[in-house]
Image (tube, rainbow, N blue to C red; front, side, top):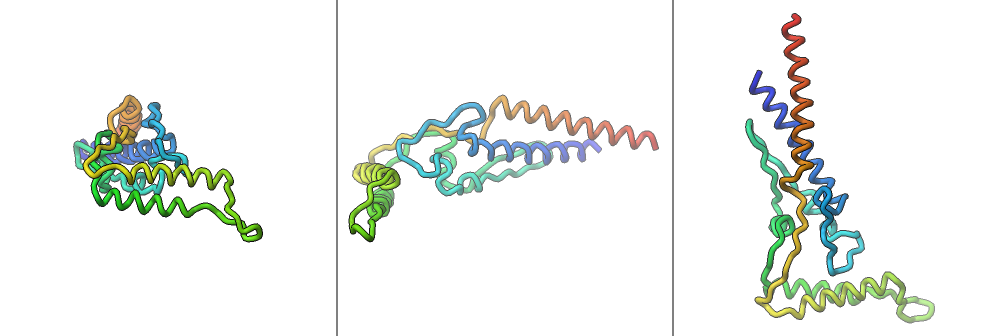
Length: 182
């Protein structure tokens, strides 16, 4: 019985916390601590939601006494904890590719055969400017990545543990009551 109670509690807690950590991406915050804005414009509104891959990569494993949350993506840790990364030649190639991709994004009006500089084109131009600035960084230079935590300890996590424990305990008490009543 004890083993089943712990198993149910850990399983329920894992589901609840995975849901809460997922909601951090909607909140654009680690619970009540907003993520710092990015210097690069983003059409989706958040650096952490460019492709959604980081959000989808969050997994949890559990045993009878603990839960472990993780991501298979190599950049998950630097976003969650913040830190400094070193520019490599491969990164510079990526930055240049993104610059060329975004600098050619200005629309052209077929009738007037001229460039259309609307808000969308200006935003893409700012994005192209950002990528060019990144591409011009020297190999070996450092880029500071601000912490945008999405998994970890927090008072909301503690409250979630308490809620799930209370619910599990109530279910366990009802099970014992029904068992003894027979």
